[in-house]
Length: 384
Ligand SMILES: [Zn+2]
Image (cartoon, rainbow, N blue to C red; front, side, top):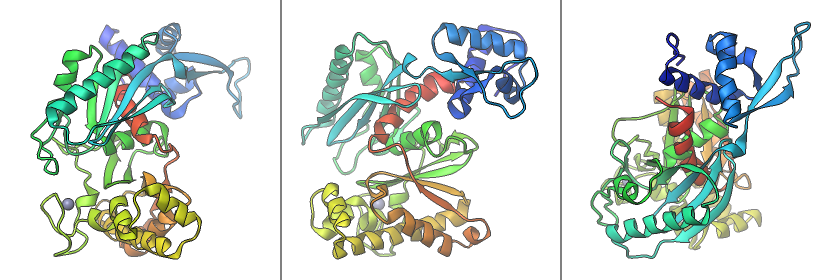
């Protein structure tokens, strides 16, 4: 949203945030192009970008190649200065903390994976997490870190920064953000890990230029996030997206969520490991590369099961792009191709307007990029 009128500090900050977001999605572009997209005057854009250049957030990058250059006018390209702004991205689960620094353009560095001791209660988990974050920040005290983003496994109360009661572990609600905020003075942003990954696709990945798409996480469990009209979809408290708990089989296997026959029980990484009786996803990938028949058959079946549930979903919302991330989206597996084919055959809306299923290009650390993305999006790119 462009704000016009009095050039108050707030208006200036919001419009600068908009310029940064445009450069993230379309950069490098010229001041003239920014003025055309935002409908702000060229003079205003010059004023806004001058300060961003002074702060080091954006840089001039030579002349733009245009098909019809205006005679006598140079069109200087502006781009984000990636390493000028860093945040800490943290993926939390009950098994491990994975953290790293993420820059303005989603580049990640200094990644650390820290195992969480098993049988922790919620208080021990909070103290451990705070301690490890403080230690990471201390080790990087020579850098200016602008904020902390946390993508957490499980159901998250995004408004109040809480992890909601975990039935599997018997934990009550955990006040993660308020606890950490007492120990860490940086702004902290919390969301569900799959929502964070969906945001990463919007900011740095396949969804960069798209206003509407769905991101599906095919990992230990199956989850989903959506971007609708350029915003991460919110259902109020939790953000929704529990694709893995949509029913695949009526009266099927019981799920810890209380329902029966959830998709997670048949097609998640965990279900595949159990069926193949192997202990790690890497082992599954190795067997698939070796063309092990039993492995390929189980993966093919799981992909079809995911496509069955996804087709129903597509019939409801008809989102035309689906981005897959997580272990099972690895291009050495046939998962993406099977889902693409099945969804386009099963969903009758897809026959009218085809669905494109793609694999994420953000790699295996997408959950940390997404967590950092929360701090970048809410702290810099999408200020409200
Ligand atoms: Zn379930």
